[in-house]
Length: 350
Image (tube, rainbow, N blue to C red; front, side, top):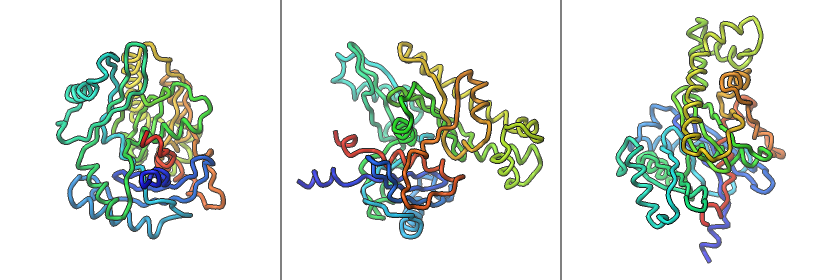
């Protein structure tokens, strides 16, 4: 009986990165936001995977829960998101006749392709498609120290962690809920310091990423135009790549980093095509994340990738009722935690 009550307890989203922490509670059927909150983190104190991280993260989590909540948080049971850039994901196929040995196959795949020891990782997998003769398996691993630190911090704040997943999976869940008839899609999540790349074809198929993000672009602009970082940020979000008197100089400053992004996207696309030659062709690029607030970025990716690209607005599908919404420039930063808040209990326990 207690298990039934536990499964019926609402799941809320909690997303923890090096630079921020966000929480959100959503009525999954109505897409109605009951509450949300956020707090900034010092990356020097939250990203070292040391024992000191636990006390710092727990302290900031308590501060957010006590002081930074708009509306209400319906539960202490959370789906926890961790940065995709700190996880390892890989997709592989195996004969259905060998399904009983799937755990051994996952371990072997991890040993071959993950550049750290398996003893230092939590490793899990999901069968994402099943053909007549083959299974397609998505394997994911995360550092034990990263996970253990956040789990302990959550425990100190009396939160119960029901499941853990990379932000890529959370964003894909939100996109699937808010984009009508999702085509095979590349999701480009431009964060503060990193960019995550996800190929979504019914399920997450491939992930990748690089250490270039929105703040990287701001610093590029500040250096090239010899202006303060605050001024560069204003140029980036107000002018961007759109036509105007500064367009040529802004494009010159930002193009090298943007080309690094498109180069990595092409690499992930090639891997997908090689691994899944019979799957549907990728048809679009959706750009999300805090760094997606660069005017003209969709057109730039469209031209470089020769594929329709646009900034996605899953935010518009969330109903905030009478709650005050986050500032417009901050909304894109809540995409991952909204995806976490949409996970259903049956998806965890089936």
